[in-house]
Image (cartoon, rainbow, N blue to C red; front, side):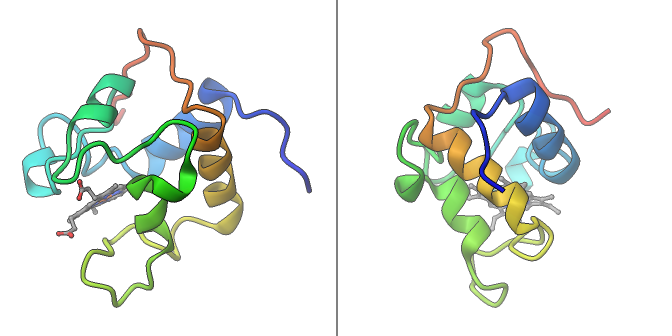
Length: 111
Ligand code: HEC
């Protein structure tokens, strides 16, 4: 099934919220590589190896790369890779390749 253009609100937000925010939020980030995925800005500026997204380039984006690591890899985290089904990974990958559009006023929260 070819994916159409990815919409942040429709496609990406629910995925990040369900599968990533529990650890990568403002409060808990310090325990999880410092990465805070609440806003586009925090996503692009936090983390041990910031930036974890290179808009327009999924292969250079750590956020995509960690989700493809085999689960025994030392950097692979609880979420990777089998919890992120391949179709969801394809959505994230395409979203990054399309420039990681994310409205500036949209802040994700766990609940
Ligand atoms: C249960 C907690 C947990 C969840 C859920 C989680 N992560 Fe992580 N994440 C971690 C931990 C722990 C690390 C640090 C691993 C290490 O020490 O190398 C990490 C590291 C990362 C890194 C590397 C950051 C850096 O700068 O080195 C990225 C990118 C990342 N996570 C993205 C995600 C994405 C995207 C999701 C959702 C699909 C997600 N994580 C879900 C715990 C989590």
